[in-house]
Length: 507
Image (cartoon, rainbow, N blue to C red; front, side, top):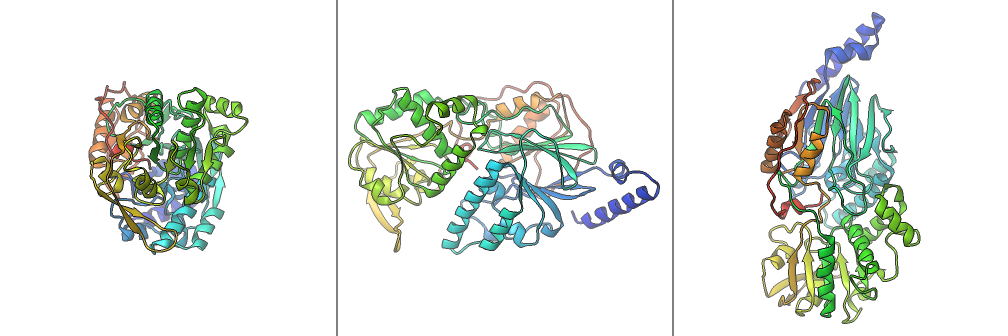
């Protein structure tokens, strides 16, 4: 990237020479120079997706996400290894923070071009960025201000699925990635090459959304490795329903720590279905205590065109709303939740690791009754309350965040049932991704991102075994897109193993 300015100057000079000879500038540059990819995030790790595409028409970013870890490094997020003013446009795959979280910072540091995304991503992007800024301001660690955030919203330009469009000097097409509402795979045509960014791919057959789009050709393809090279078992929602029913039948309440975006909506949809099928009683209330989850749920209900056929049918049968039905309560204050009484209830609390908001309060109230249960359905970082709960620590100090005043601590014996459930991640497993790659007629090199080093290397080895040149890039590494292609063979059969904590990280 150190020679970027020289490259652009050379490209410009080539274009002028072509024009003086009566030849279209793009054609000459296309023969002279291939586009290149440089990886500035989500390599050797899950977070911080930020891929720079250099072409004769300028520089383009695909995603601009936050780096996240157990001990976030603010400095790591505070700057970019390129000049934001030189970026012509951003193509956004979806509205998770590790993909969109630094867009306002990019604007703050000089970016002023369009940000392309689907309409659902536009709305979820606003919701998630506003929520993260509020938290950041409260903790004194904001990377940008409200004005930067608002300007980033104003730069958004909506694009539909399945239409090839000319945007900012290149052609692009967005297709369904099946990860969260409005998530997209992005094809970009530049300098005679086609590059496919898969974004985060959702699992086949999951509730609510359509399966990821099968593509057929590309000169380069990027895909994730969150799970690594594993087959895994599909989620068994009937078994999940029976386990929920067992808790309720013994007079207990259930706590489900979850994420505000997508996992909460999936669970609400599942609980309505379990009621309709008679698996759980209709009179057991379901509480959701998070304003951000409530906002995301409203957005999901506003875009029925992105639902899969089964969810569309359920929405019609439920009177035109998928989520808001009798027995579902958007609790907006602690009193509604904590004075419900002693009857069985289901609590969805959007602190996935039980550390924040109302989740520790629910746990404190439910902890010492063995009829109750907490089901852990996501990543539990070492040191988190959820990790300590799963490890069997008891008694336990629980951090209780008060609306006004300092955090207090409750000490509780953990007598409730603790269970860990897999299969609720919105990421495709490795076997599905390699099967998807095997569905291509021809494909250029594969670049494996969005996973720790071991998992990325596993997936690269899997692609190589299919006859596809594959790389697990390093931070800052660049590759030229030459147009060389391969005919992939069938995907190898990967080992079956239970998803571990890391694999259930929904980002």
